Length: 307
Image 1 (cartoon, one colour):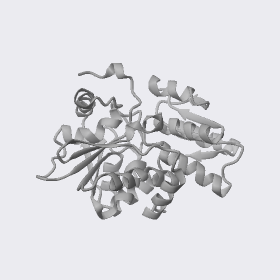
Image 2 (cartoon, one colour):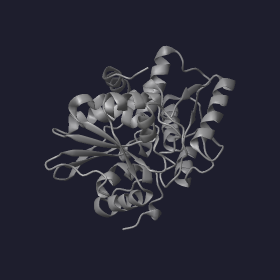
Image 3 (cartoon, one colour):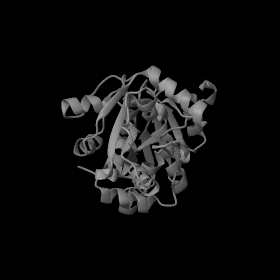
């Protein structure tokens, strides 16, 4: 199964008025930020969540049993927010290690929050069991066609908002965002994935030619903590020749602090990963190259930022 640009366009129509059209800002000549950290719930995730729920509502899959979702935090926030807005019960499974900033926000969204296990994969297994028991609709964190298509609307907005660009740099966890953006951008620009060296889901899959399970760790594990890349994301990455750059934790921490110090952007570690590729020199634009960086997550404790 794959996601097409037509799927992304239909998602944009379906979720219009439900999500924010987040701004772009040129922060330096040839460097533009897409500020998706300003989206509802502090990340891009509501785009996919709304598309999943509204698609299911159209098809009759969304019933009185509500939804279940598993998340390291951001996908759960998005699913809970979309469910609340549509008047649907939500049960969200998160690891015991979910940051307090995300857990606190989840509890304000009228969802039943269940903490289980130490990482996303364990929460996901609990969500599957709850789905099977209750008949609720599963809202996957990243590997459902409706989720990927919804996240791809970020790419459609970039095409509309930025008149000329060569490269889009995107953080990778489970891959819903990069799969959707690569599909939306198509041949208009090069899309580049950036991921922590301690959670290289796309990198492993590109080398193996298929999704591969691996360990998860590092400072961005709460948002980029999938054990493997989604099949839909890998298909999009392979089709659009998306490379993967690996970033050390130290570079992620430094980029996050730089985003705060120089641009007054309070991001979580996962939200700083794409920018870390530039700040660390892991990606060096060619002369005259015009780059868009997706700044994708804001759910953090601001007291941990340093200038």
